[in-house]
Image 1: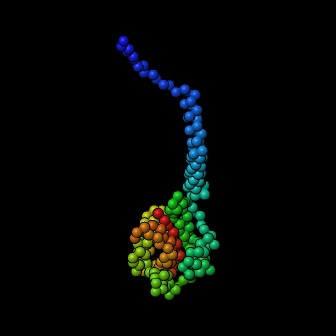
Image 2 (image 1 turned 180 degrees about the vertical axis):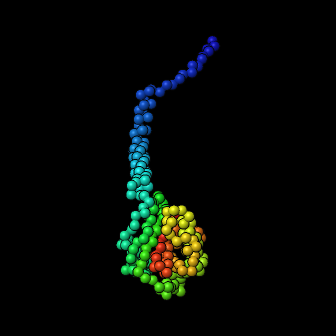
Image 3 (image 1 turned 90 degrees about the horizontal axis):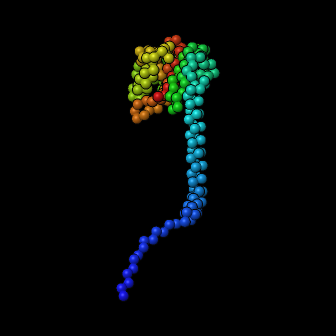
Length: 208
């Protein structure tokens, strides 16, 4: 007698409670890492927000504005001391301009100072080039620095500053305190000019 059999396809379905339990166990193991990742992200966002608010407050706050108010003699003492003429010669601060600062420190500051006396024979430089230079004879990076300064003279912010022609004239001397370059192009300077004929000192500090 022939016996025939048939095979039934049986589908196995997991118990939903078992699936949930397995998922919960996996999440329990992962939760410490997820928690610390969320904490780190929260701290990152907090610090980023504080930095953005601080920069905005610095850039647009009431204390970061251009000023043409005359600086005090005490405020400009460093100019005469840097160039070794001595702050005791200061008689009057004639003009001042202090600009606002950008995020990267870009600025333009300038002063015109009348002093009691100065003689051309005082305006010397040493064998290494430190000291005073006649503006009509400068070359190299110092010549480029004068060109950098001259770029500021086309506006009206420091219209009282010597013109390009006056800066390059025989009667003008310059004391380079600092010149910073990107490659060979000046991007920041602090220069002191003196015009002995009328005992005037002109200082400029600028960065772009």
